[in-house]
Amino acid sequence: MQHRVRLLTSKHILDEVETVLFDHFQKSRRFVHLALQKILRIASEVKLPDVIRSHVPGDPDDSPIVQTALSGKADLIVTADKVLLELGKVQDVEIISLDEFELRLPVDA
Image (cartoon, rainbow, N blue to C red; front, side, top):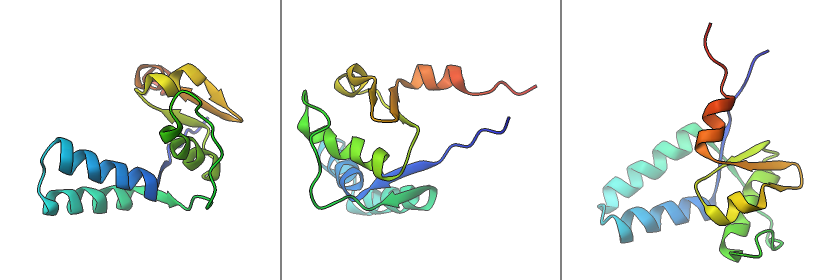
């Protein structure tokens, strides 16, 4: 069986990455720009609807993350976010930790 990993992002996620790199890690504008360009080279950008349903009652700011996965028809969200992990699943999208994702990766024979 062949497994495929496809990375998804959205404007919301890119904006969040920019804020974290610039404001919290004090990275230069150039570093942030290059990081965002790299993300866009390896991930498919998903357009989010104008109105996003509330998928995460414990943290409404995470609803666009879930919507990115739903709009991109993802199977999984891999995250360390405890509020998202507590959901376990939204519609057909399972929410798992990095450790769980690693356990699911096929072992090379």
